[in-house]
Each structure stands twice: as C-alpha cells, then as structure tokens.
Image (cartoon, rainbow, N blue to C red; front, side, top):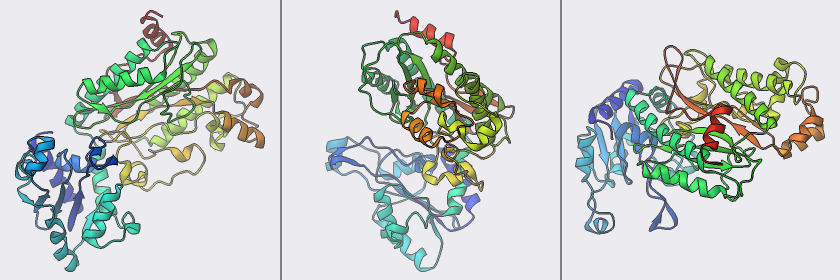
Length: 464
C-alpha cells in the first residue's frame, strides 16, 4: 500500500469532482475455478485499489459527497476463517490504514442504501464487470441485472477516468518496478530460447521470474512462433531455426501496477534477410511514433503516422503500391497492421478498460469503424502523466490474405502476387511503455535489446 495520506487525498479529489450524492464502491470477491474452495488468485478491483488500497475480498465502501462521510463495509475474520487463511487485520485496522474512520458490517450496506434511495438521493456506481457485483447492485438498488451497466454513472466514471489517467510519481515508480521485472523476463527469453524447445518452457520460466521478484503477470503471456495471431496464448509449438518468436509479456508489481513489453527475435539467433527487412519497417514506424509523442497531440494522429510509415516501408519491399496517404486513408495497410498502436496503462494493462473506451480513450471523439482503425483503444490528445504503450507490428494472416484476395480488395494498393510468398511469414511486434512528459516522453523500465544488432547480440550471447 501507499501512504495513508495518498488515499485520503485521492478520495477528496474525487468528491470535489463529483460534487454531490453517494458514491458506491464494490470490491471484488473470491472467484472459484471449479468448486468454491479452489479459487483463482484474488485480484481486487482496480478503482477500489486506487481509492482504498485494500487488497482483500469482501469489501465495499460508500462516499457521501454531501456530508463528507466515508464508510468501509466488511466483516472481521472468524476463527474458522483464521484456520485456513491465518490471522487477518480487523476491519477497523484496515480502515485506519487508508484514512477511513467509519466501518460497518457488510450486511449493513443494504440498510445504508435504503434511506438515500427512498429519499431520492443520487447513488452512483461504476460500470460493473463481475457477475456477483451486478447481482449486488440489484440487491442494493433494485436495478435489474440486464440494466446494471446501462445505469452506471457517467459523471462518476468520467471523474475516475480523469483522475486515474494522470499518473502520480508514486504510481510511475510502481510501473517502473513492473517494467524492470518485465525487462528481465524479455532478456531471459532471448538468451534462453533455442531450436527444439517448446514455447511453454520459456513462458513458464518468465512467469517464475515475475513471481520470484514479488510480482505476478499483468496478463497471460503471449509467447509464440505464430506471432500473426495477435493474442496467442497457446504455448505448445516446438521452436525451430527460421522461426521468429513474438514475446508480448508484462509483470504486475506487488501493488498491481502493470508493464507491457513486446520483442520479436529469431530462434536461431540470426534474422534472415527477409525478416530483417520487415523488422526494420516496424522499428522505423515505432521510432517515428515515439518522436511524435508530446502533450496535446491526439494519439490517433500518431497511430496514423505509424500506419503511413509501415505502408511506405512495405511499398519499398514491394508488398504495397500506389499512393501511401491514399492507401492508409482507405485502410489498405490493415492487411498487415490490423490493430491499434497502443493503449493507456496503469493499474490495468489496458488501463480502466472496464470503465469504457469511449471515456478512457476517446472523450467525445468518434471511433472510426474502418477495419483496423476501429480497434484503436486510445485516440484522444495526450497529456503529461499519461502512461502509454507504443506497439506497431506487421502480421501476415493467411485467412485475411485469402479473404481480401478473393475480393481483390484494395488491389490498387496491395501486391497480392508478392504477398503470397509471405503467407508463412508470421508476425513482428515491437512495444515499449512510455510516460508523456511536458517536453515529450520518457521510456519506462530498463532498455531491452531492440535493434537488429542488439537482438542478435542478446541471442548469440546465449551460446547458440
């Protein structure tokens, strides 16, 4: 946990932003894998963590903006609980640690809601994503589960997004911790992976590094010779010389702040000439995107700059043709780059995604429905304190090639004859985490080998 004063200050800022009403926070519960006593590792709701810092199940809270009262709801452990979990702090001790003076049993939460609801006072809650909390909203406020998300407070949501978007120094320090662990995971993979190994051998070891350093994974590791599948969580392939591995992984710090880095490297330790050509295109797109980062610049413009850079490089390789500006405007580049350039990051690897991308990434901007561009999670202007990923890529997806070629889609921009020779190419992604500063940006974490020369040196160092 951070210092008590940090949580007090965060809640005061929130109450000043919302102005009136009751703000209802529902913490997460334990979630069983296959029967009640066999549970997934507990993960507290990120907004609850941000304002209350208590990483334990069975908690709720209410901020009464009008009276200034703050109440933490929960139950003290019984002897039966202690038998299985060991001694736990009492509810009042938990509350004191984060500057909350009033506590009540969890059963009192419903009673606490009855009078305000009857009086017509506004009770606001954030968009729920866990089924158990959707049911709690029905029990507390009488809102049918089908409408629970629809009735979530836009005012409350926007206030939380505005506050959590700007990372304080103590948050940046936590992200740096997560990034340092992730850098170790990445360099281990480069130095260790070799032909004949199964992907899961490396993925398992990277998970072990995160655990050994006091953290965990911020998201399931993506480690695959089939990098053309953007979120590939299968680890059963045997790596062979000639393959490239896309390693998209991120640790979570002890306080649950995330990192998210991607590197692509050759199993043999040496890129082929064709792989080098494509890798240079991706690296050039990332550098141009990084150079464009500064406060006030819409991230969608930076995304489109990366797309034009990719298209220009692919044109030089003979895979695209025609006018680059027109090709990107028409969406032809999405044959090779189907996703967005990056996303915000913090307590969630896709920060605040549960609160809705329309609030987190767009703030009134319209999402472009064009294939590829529609997956961009962040479009709004950047501000100092934003933590953002920058992750261009090239992905040769056989099924997409077949579909577009059958329609001769964008044939004026795509050289389908040459593209056929890249059906088995796979994918390349290069991703870094940055914080936007007043002058531009700062890279987070220890630099991981990224240029062709650096990557090959890291791989060769392993004795291949």
